[in-house]
Amino acid sequence: MLEVHDQGEVIAVRMARAVLGRPLYFCYAFLVNGLLIDTGLSHVCGAFQRFLRKYHVEQVVITHHHEDHSGNAWVANALGFLPYAHPRCVEILATGFPLQLYRHLIWGPVRPARCQPIPAKIQAGRYSFQVLHAPGHSEDMVVLLEQERGWLFSSDLFLSRRLLYLQPEEDIYQLMASLDHVLRYGFTTVFCSHRGRLDQGKEALQAKLDHLRELEAAVKDLRARGWDEEAITRRLLGREGWMTWLTGGHFSKRNLIRAFLRSTR
Ligand SMILES: [Zn+2]
Image (cartoon, protein in one colour):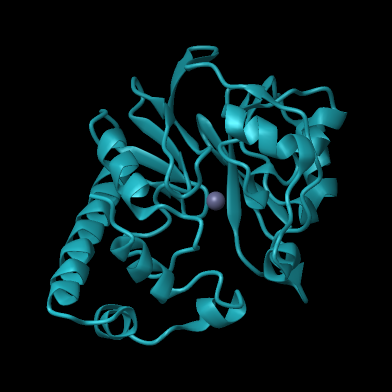
């Protein structure tokens, strides 16, 4: 399913694979004055192609290579677009990348796509977007800041105030550094790729960083007292939940604790 929500200056495109009429997991792309930010999942490629034909799109940005952002980059290519992306993302999408089964089922396969390196600034009519590299969730992630309007298109930098699960490839310290860096800029509204528009977005991002700092301190305190990884996980985050089972352990609470213990600082 693909729904277009016209929110005035920003058009939100909400997409999900639906099974028996029920959406599995939503993701968003956003369209601002001809600038399309992300392309969603390939399971909705037909609807996405119709959307691209119907709406005024001039430029496309892929915020990082994950399949719920880049899934229809190949469709954009087929219609003559050469999306902007971080140089590392350009490399990854040139060949495509393997997916775990659950990702294949929820989002769909990733076809190779051609992209071009993203400049530091993107102009879309009267809107001026500053491109900020924000690694951690993935090494190639960028977020887009429109300072005049107070908007941050945060890709997967936010997701939730309290992170519970992590993938092994994610770097928690890089993620915290990216949050800290982005929070130095002036903005109020956050457009999250999975939560949509958050009017108190800056506060939400700050709450996420504060929570991660508290968690880091608690993990290190227990470690200093001789607790092992499993005991720390149980104490601070509880038992593994549905995400762990659904993803075959790719997302887990244990990964989050382990990421803090991998400390290099
Ligand atoms: Zn992602």
